[in-house]
Amino acid sequence: MKNILEQAFPIQPIEVIKSLLPDINGAGERIVCLNGGILEIPYRIYNDMPNFSQLNNLSTQELSIIYCLYSRHSNGHIRQEMIKKLIEIEFQDFMIPYIFLLVGEYVVEIINDIYPFIEKNKEFFIEFINNNHDLTIVTYQRMVSYWNEYYRHSQYKYLNDYPGKRIFNLFDPHIT
Image 1 (cartoon, helix red, strand yellow):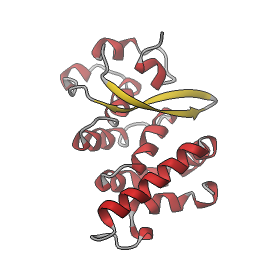
Image 2 (image 1 turned 90 degrees about the horizontal axis):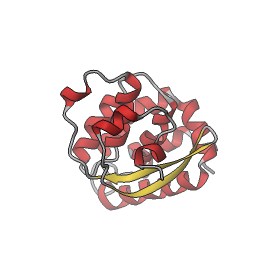
Image 3 (image 1 turned 135 degrees about the vertical axis):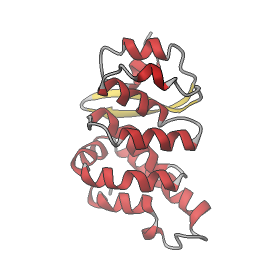
Image 4 (image 1 turned 30 degrees about the horizontal axis):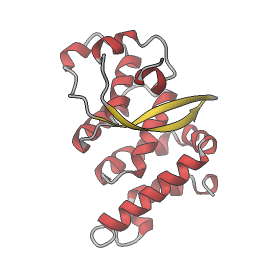
């Protein structure tokens, strides 16, 4: 039986990560298609933050896995911290679903942080969107719902001004 790490990342080997995070406390999942494979990304994880001194000897790819995984954390501040680290390191295609899923969440500061990254790597996200139509629609609906609930009566009166909608506008012909 595969564990959460094996289901959530197309990369092998991930033994180093398994030794750092032997038990991942996750809830829910998002099923995505990436490069012809199926990944089961945890909706939320509840683990404590890893000791960053343990991460000093990890490769860029291994760090990317840690950052992706913790971008699904239940604490929005941790998600934001991890996504900022993730978008600063070498781009790898397995990062796409983790970043994309954040567009449909309520922490607008994270959405603002990822906008330039998504815009810069738009062609990779278009392919992901084309291969994950149902997930894209659900993510769009969640984004609109969060805008309506938390932001339409404050700083983003109009949906088209909301950062999540601005991201979806980058892909408009690909999501209809």
